[in-house]
Length: 174
Image (cartoon, rainbow, N blue to C red; front, top):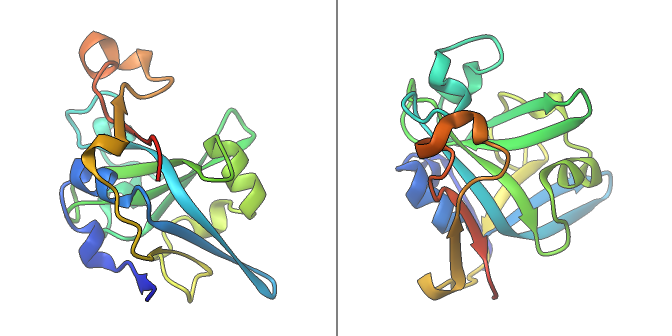
């Protein structure tokens, strides 16, 4: 049975949610159909002390969603051409989110948002069927041995410690 992930799922420590979201489904309603993709790769950004986290410099117009309620989307543009889909985690006013980097069919966060037609209109929206973008648990069981942890991609600016934190989670196999 499909279970829609609610705020309670996301209102937990970011690293825990990052591991637990692997194997869950990202669902996007496109016109008259639904696209269902298994999440296979994510990156965690965890608080003001995380030098790779956008929230490290405090709340700005861009980062405001990260400081909001868990279970809401934080969507931003990079390089003037790629939308990045993040889901806010943890408690309100604690800047943390998980970047959805890949699925069973799409590798790369920019390719994912392009394929699913995700852009700024999803920023600050809650993840649920009413917004047309949500997450579901469909009973896929993931064991610890199927999860690879590595440093995040493209965060050298965060320095030798935070730039190498193993906050990227990859599903090795189902």
